[in-house]
Every structure is written in C-alpha cells, then in structure tokens.
Length: 93
Image 1 (cartoon, rainbow, N blue to C red):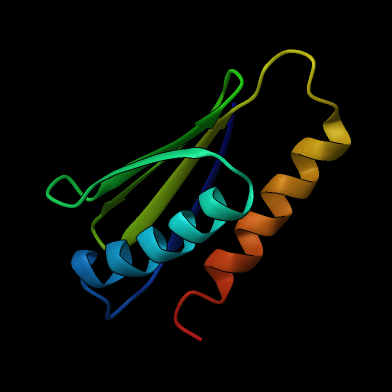
Image 2: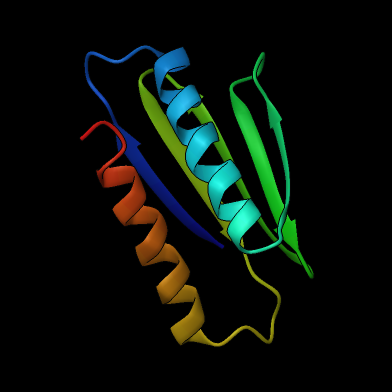
C-alpha cells in the first residue's frame, strides 16, 4: 500500500475536497474507473480490477492511499503515484 499526503495551509477542508473531487472524477472518467465520493465525509474511492485508491480530507490535509493487485508492475505503480503527486502539487496553482 502507498500513501501520499499534501497540506494546504489557509484552505478549508471543504475547499480542498471540492478540488480533489474534481481531479478524481476526471481521472476516473479518463481511465474508466469506478468512482464514489462522500461530500459529507470529505472522502472518496476509486477502483478497478482489484486496485483501489481512497482519499480523505481532514485538518487542511488530503491523504491518498493506494492498494494495487499483486501483479501490477512497479513501473506502473510509480507512474500512477507520480501522476497523483503532480495533480496534488498543482491543486491550487
């Protein structure tokens, strides 16, 4: 399992959730992934073929956890994680 987190000082949890939700919906649409979000709980889940990604916003921070099926190559995992990190780094840019 991989974990990625970013803090956004000066942003409310709701502001962060709205932006992350937009990014995750776009990623899910482009890659034909199942996506569910919980606006009240400020969290969401994306899944496909045994792999899951979850995110939650709390205290001005978003935390993303990724679980991959056993047969996913390390290079693909790195690509996915780098893409998520880039999107989170530019979330309010």
